[in-house]
Image (cartoon, rainbow, N blue to C red; front, side, top):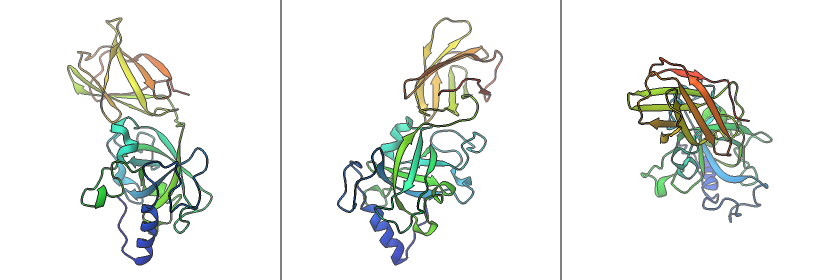
Length: 266
């Protein structure tokens, strides 16, 4: 989470941010001078992870080293209502500081696009669970991304945001961990919707697609014995697109392997 400021001027800024509507952000809150632009929703945003974003590595989506995975420092943790138990992992959001609500800590005329890679949990030591309470839309962004739109000393700023398609280089990647009868597959570098709706696996010695289940974040599991077999995956993302990655995992693979496919969603 972003550091807490105690100066009077910052407490004033935090008060303005906390006044933003949370239950239905398309409805004009009493403290808001005008509704958000069409297609945009209201939230607020803090930052974490340090100036180099090193503190953002890992996270509740399971991507691990975000630089190695290609996500870099344009990432965010999501509050409960946005994270959706991990179903939002990989989604992309365009975010701007909401100058109409409070211009004090905003950098004008800029937006930043970030990928959801982590979860911002409620802090029940604070009233109502704090900034990332269960019903409030909130982005806890990597510091370099947040500073594209906000002034550092603000700490917490009102923002407007919208879902946007993800742009990725190269194909979808699969990392297989686990052990015999428990195959845990991390799916990363997903373009378009970015998030996965369903996933299936087929071994080379079978004609049947077997459904996989979301285990946590962007990790999906199968309880079948697949060790060392050539594998295909069928992935459906949340905008409805489906791709089949035929024989994408070679025979003789071992746990810990990462496969970069040649296919990508558009």
